Length: 326
Ligand code: UFG
View 1 (cartoon, rainbow, N blue to C red):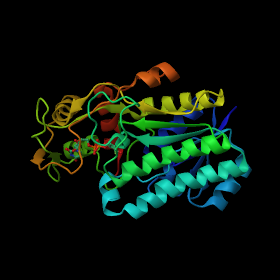
View 2: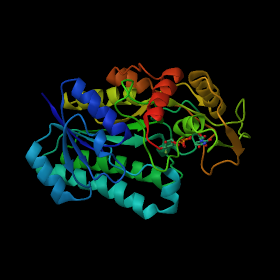
View 3: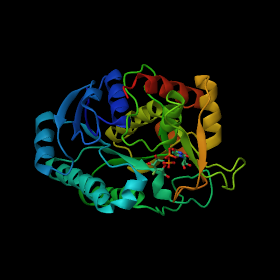
């Protein structure tokens, strides 16, 4: 049975990947500093408390568990926060990734699958966006993810480190069995904010950022991908690298876009309630359209989505939202 060390395994995407790994006969070890992750979401493997920048701790965990591969999620994820405090983002995301690569180079390289982002494309010239599109991030968060990709290329060349970066579009939804889900604080993402407004209509409205974009209904279009479909892609990526196949970056999205207003409409259908919202000004740095070309993930990894229709995304996210203690 292959053993996988998952950094950031107590977080949103990480915890779903751990559940998926355990269900597919992998042994899981979570490495997380719990700065944004949740101890109660570590349910599918051993837990080692630690920060990815702490190379001594990382080395001792690697020696203790001897994982066959690593999946690296531990990073800071908020675009707005990265603009306010770029140092924290370069520190956690760039230095954290670098420490992992250095420790692997010293202790023996093994496959490393890492969280990337569509943020590396910045404001894409056209959609759908393939991996060959120009990378031109427009904020520190996106830049940290691109620097990580460059470092991986260099470590592969110098030390033979096998790697795959999965560039997520809009991760959404929750475990269909309701055991884990999205719990960010503060929450910045559209779908959980829409569902919070449905749940607490007297206390909160969701702000829709801009209705004057050059799209059919004036709101931004995004490619929402269910977190369990992201999970299966990570396992396929590990298998790909464990079979000795080529290192590269791969988009994860559905290829279909939904506008902010379409998400609001779908949330009303799924919940059977009204979404209280208010139109606000555009948020800085939001591209009008961001939709993946996911052909490479399908062809290279044989990846297929199972849960990423918008109803399933919203139904699973809504079930999770209602379980949360507020
Ligand atoms: N939006 C709202 N109201 C909200 C939150 C979001 O109207 O309360 C809008 C945004 O303006 C955007 C869309 O809903 O048009 C989606 O916004 P999210 O914040 O949910 O997601 P983003 O597309 O901004 O972010 C995602 C990832 C980031 C990544 C980025 C790349 O979450 O990690 O794509 O562009 F950097």
